[in-house]
Every structure is written in structure tokens, then in C-alpha cells.
Image 1: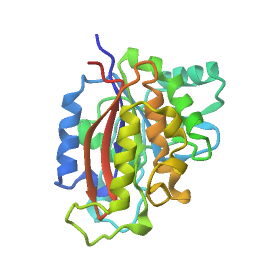
Image 2 (image 1 turned 90 degrees about the vertical axis):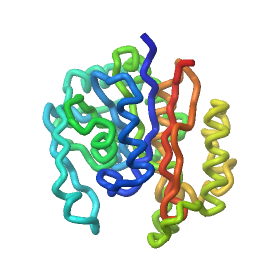
Image 3 (image 1 turned 45 degrees about the vertical axis):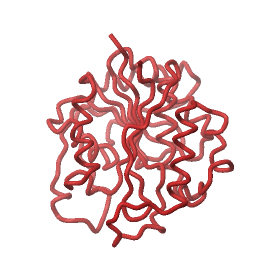
Length: 265
């Protein structure tokens, strides 16, 4: 049986959970495109910690960690079960790799997790384990944590990084609905896709210096949204391949992209 890929999924605006958009409709089809996993592990840009943290609750609160959106978003619940046993396995894998971590039995599912999973798996029946990200780690360090979890793919665990490749809230034009990206955002995304497909780790680990538009696409105060890409990529280190499955832009430069790693030919 082929391995599940690991995925990077942009969670975009919280409205992705409900809106009828090109990206939302793509996410609706993504779950059926994949073999149904037995569990999902999500590195989320909205859970930051120094030491690696792993959710270990059997039942989750749905966290509505955003403001200024329609009331309907705050009414949504995503009651996916947790899987403490899988959280324990993850802790063991990380310990073997020399990565300190702790289990958090109180953490709920933030919108970096539930907005996308609601589109992929609306029945909320697949167990979920959430993972924090550490934007202060080097890109190589983030990749290495994902790599430590690569063996989980053989156990039908889907590993997802949830963030954004181009994420500069200060540069967004909320009135723009034309889908045409700013030149700097497209330049960064084009460079990124080329380096991912080439599996050019040397360039990717130095993206802030090498990529055109990097400091606009990934401002110093927003690297936590780029980090999940590297965790997800690391989870496919044993089967190094990358493919762009979807990309569109909103508000001038917010990039809705999905990359698949470890896709077997």
C-alpha cells in the first residue's frame, strides 16, 4: 500500500471554513482525493511554543481565536476526537530524535486546524493531534522535527502543516477580489515552488536571503505561518518529492496554496 503524502495547506482567512470560493471548493474535494487516514496530525501556525507541544486530549474544545468575522463562524464546532495514544507515540519519536516535547491535555483545536479539516473531513470523525510550531527554530530544525514523524505515514497517519506561504496582513487589500497577485507575492511563490519541486533544501533553508520578495511575503513578525511548510516537508524526507496541488490569491497577496510531499509516482 502506498504511503499517504504529507501536506502543506494554507488556512487563509477563517472564512475558508464556510465560504463558497475556488479554494474552499478545492478543499472540499481534497479529502476524497486521499485515502482516508486513521488519524491526522496538524502542525498549526496558531499554536506557538519554545519546546515542542503535542495535544493529548481525548476530546477537544473548538477554539475561535479570531475577531471581527461573521457570527456564524463563532457558532461552528468541530468535535473531532483526540488520540492520546498517538500523542504518546509522537513524544517517543521526538525523544528518539533528541527533541524535547510535552503533552498538553488541555489544548483545543485552533482555527489553523479546524477550518481546513472541516472542509476535508466534515464528519469530524477522524482522530486529530495538534502540534505547536516554534518560529525561532532554524528552517533546518523545523524540517528535522517533521522528519522525526515520517514513520507515522506508514501507519496511515496524515501529517499536515497549516499556515501560509505568503502571509503579510499589513499588506492585504481587503477590497480586492480580482484574484490577481501583487508582483512580489507571485515572485516569491514562483521561486518557492521551483525550490520545493527540486527538493533544494539548501536554498529553502536560506529562503529569507535567497527568495525574491521574501521579506514582504514572510515578514520577520510572521514567520510562524511559513514554518508549517517545513515541518510538513520534513515528514516526507524518506520519499523526497513535492508537487503544487493548488494555488490562488486573495486580497492582493494572501496565498491559498496546497503542496503535497512524498507523492509516489
